[in-house]
Length: 354
Image 1 (cartoon, one colour):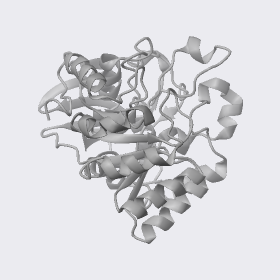
Image 2 (cartoon, rainbow, N blue to C red; image 1 turned 30 degrees about the vertical axis):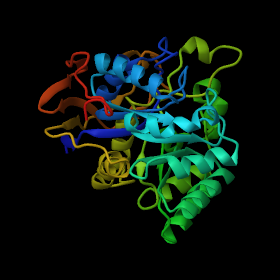
Image 3 (tube, rainbow, N blue to C red; image 1 turned 180 degrees about the vertical axis):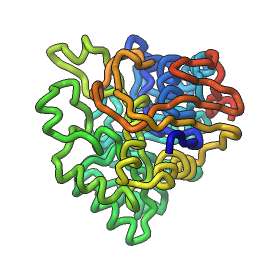
């Protein structure tokens, strides 16, 4: 198998840092990183500065995106007690609603029941609710899915106790789905002890047993691979108070292709996790004539070749089984041989042009 062809991949969990964090990523560099990683559609999170909690902010940010994006982009609305009355007006511009039940960057953590209740009562039923929920907060999300009879998607699940609870919920027919990140599949707490802030993210890296549980559930319980692409500059990571998060758009497919080469999952299952299921769960539009070509040759991940503005990865120096050689989006070659060929504004923005 010297070359394989995949459909354009979808990453439903990225942080594009617009507005307020453009020094570490912006719409152009973030979508360039996506294409270099074989990803042709991404969803951006709302914990920006200001956060994406009002129609006015959301429309302004979407307009900026439309000028700069190289691949297709949608944005999450953020749940906030201060702006909960504007959810219905915000919904037409958002791909989904994000609720943060645990620690997050910015002011979007939801800790009160009235806000949660309002989200489940007022957010349109045809759009998904996604949650940052860890440990016992996963039980809260499952309970809300059961009470209101509507789908809940759990972001970056990282612990055995969480994935086993989600598996139990699915066995009982509850409308829940979940995602896992490559860094939680390929790294554990020992990597944090070795690398320090460069391997610090939220949720924090788990134990080897947590990692084993994620792999055990990758063939059935887990629905999506999502990167939680969260770039920060090296200066920020080396500061006295380093922020959590790592880049992931350019390393996700090479890592997962390596798992395929090692017979840890099938190629068909990879396509389900990184294309079919994300599109179905989030009801995302099709991308005709869109595919990714991967050359199956041993390759070393290098920070210096990254398109992400942050310019580093915790996977620097890792050998992977393949590299992305060409990406075609709607019949146009947009990435080839390490070069971005698309022009700014080439991508489509969900909520404005879908």
